[in-house]
Length: 112
Length: 114
Image (cartoon, rainbow over all chains, first blue to last red; front, side, top):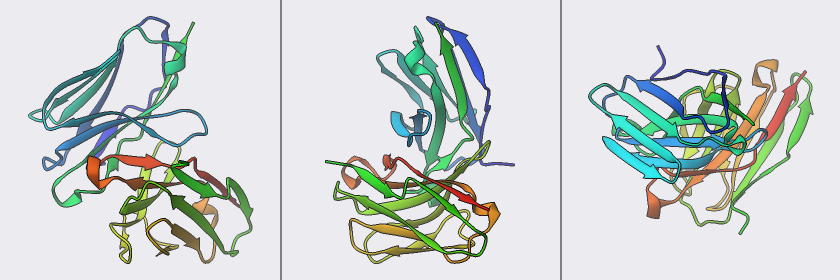
């Protein structure tokens, strides 16, 4: 079983939809949770960063962490075609501090 | 300020050939990383360097070697390439001022081993 599980999709939604992306994990030592966005043939770029449990909002993006359930989510409101990309969750903490463990990535397409 | 740069962008090798992937960062980061990305597998850590002069194995180090040449540069070497090493390779660096968890990635090197 992988330490971090992410539904690879692909996920296709119409413009304006609310998108929910999720990851589950098994390592209870993880404390730092990130979402990276990767456009086709590009390197990943950091989108959201959350420490421990709770919510964080940045414009149309909201990241949620539920450590009791070992579950994290990324919500995208009013999705745009420019949001079409692969979204990767990543985590670190405990003995893996300084090293990230990534999910498999979810391919998202927002069509006009 | 170029961030993280990688060379080459694309390479085709024959089985058994060797090559070195180059990575450089101009953000004065202490830590640098090499990942490979395969379909359905996400990013997997090959090697990392927490600081200049140190290197450690990651999740999938077999078949690779690394050199932290100085604070800016971190190279990945394939001594005898195998088809299983066909992948996209990403280099990353991290900024101690924002936390080691925030990593900045290069554009990647696409490697095809025939």
